[in-house]
Length: 241
Image 1 (spheres, helix red, strand yellow):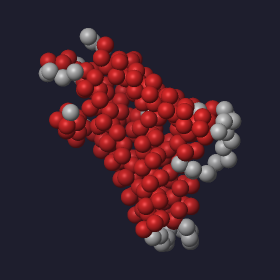
Image 2 (image 1 turned 120 degrees about the vertical axis):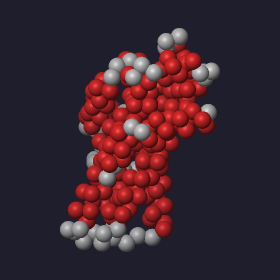
Image 3 (image 1 turned 45 degrees about the vertical axis):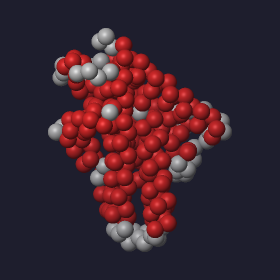
């Protein structure tokens, strides 16, 4: 399993999409530098949690992580190299699990990378202590884990469709728009994965009303994650068999 994960990272290392996504992570910190250089910001936590994390979860991360996940799972099929992998004595489910672990690790790495960039940007005119730093890191890591679960449906749809990256972009756009629309519905906001992340991480920026208690949001996210995960593994087992 370790060798499979290392192989996935090596494939990503030689691709442009990973570097494009890393550069994309610098967008919000750059905005923070511009904003914080013009205002007398007194609270690191307010600026951090109410601006960058909200925009990351709602807009930036679904696009970045969705594209990376799609690349990891469909690259071999687009380049017609998937059947070559099957010559190696590796189970399809084992290969899918390795890809999922790779995606999870990448999400966490890029989440920490984004947080550190925000720290650098927000230090302009702002002072904070170790406690504040750890609180922010904890919230970012939690959002990263939940984001991994939230994009599993995107991965499932894309690998079932067996299409190109263009289809994945359409799916990601629809997914992001659905999440934004869900904010204005008290029912959808309690069950749509991306909005659930805002709720669980206690990102209180928008006045979002929820029709159900947070328990139902947890249940919804868990069910969506499990169903998507099982779907990915089962489809990986039967496809091209």
